[in-house]
Length: 143
Image (tube, rainbow, N blue to C red):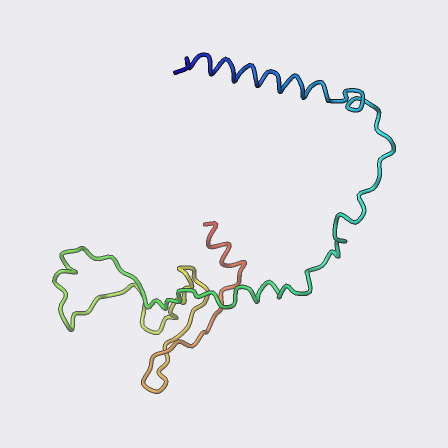
């Protein structure tokens, strides 16, 4: 069996020879020579039209099918857990919203509109009475 240190020594010697051969073949004059006149890179890039690509749909079309959580809120309240445990069928919970007040319409937790309850064909719905503008929404977020 051969000595492992001899194997390492042979590998290092072989690497040194390969490196010396590579440096001998490099033309150092070409590396440091002054470049000739620069040539433009034509044909490498597509021309920039400045507008959207014709195959790209409008930006809004890309998000129209994204589902969001729509919530209609009658009101809110805070109650202790002991009262929640005492709730039974027919119990009434008092909310902070007043009867006849507009209800909040939230999308993903953000207020976007207010409306009133309607009944159509035995189903509840909401008629929007006020749409919150984007500037009003931003103002409420900054508070």
